[in-house]
Amino acid sequence: MVAGYACLLLTALLAPPPPTEAAQAEFLRQAQANAGKKLSEGVTESRRVTLKLGGIRHDAHVQTVEDPADNDSYRYNLAAFALGDVLGMNSIPTTVQREFQGRPASFTWWIDDTLMSEKTRLAKAVKPPDTKAWNQQVYVMKVFDLLIHNVDRNMGNVIIDKRWKLWMIYHSRAFQTAHVLHDPEDVLRCDRGLFARLRQLDAATLQSKLSTWLTADQLSAILIRRDLLVKAFEARIAEKGETQVLYDHLPAR
Image 1 (tube, rainbow, N blue to C red):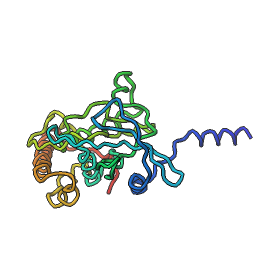
Image 2 (spheres, one colour):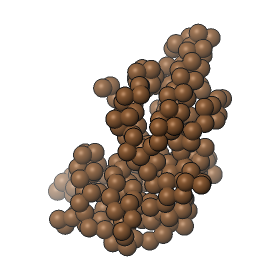
Image 3 (cartoon, rainbow, N blue to C red):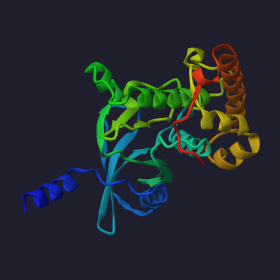
């Protein structure tokens, strides 16, 4: 009897696996949204909204910002998610486009099994249970931020869930048209599959997947930065050796 109760308790404490990406996207598109509340931290015009559909409730992060003068747009959250999918990444929460209070918006799946932000982890000097795996996730983030020219990444928008999975949120100020790598010192290591997909990335794919949200100049700039990234990693591999630069972390495709 005691063992049975212990088993039930353990089952209750274990976080259930998240729904599939497709199920999350459908829910985000179809569920009824309340007015939500403004977030005290993060980017402008950002709200936490509760969605309901068929007895299911879940929160979403909603942005409607559209400020071309400051290169700040909800559209870039959608572009980041789409590009992450092209590159075989799994660290950007599901994001869809729909209207919110009569305005076009990005709806992003809320990471509700959050352990802490990277900002909190660093402030409290919390060590990851698997430092190697954690660092490999961080390297993926650094490469992605270089590719999309995300100069607005801060440790408050790096979320750690209870499985110690890293999630990247807030991309509304990315995708600038700069033809340089803003932090070239971040060219350190790269997931092997990600590196291969970077090499394969082409204009036709970007046009097909991202042109709804990005301009021609922004798409062109992605490829220019991709070329710089590939060249920098190839030079590093020549200097350090492939095993010191490339590693296997992301799921195979």
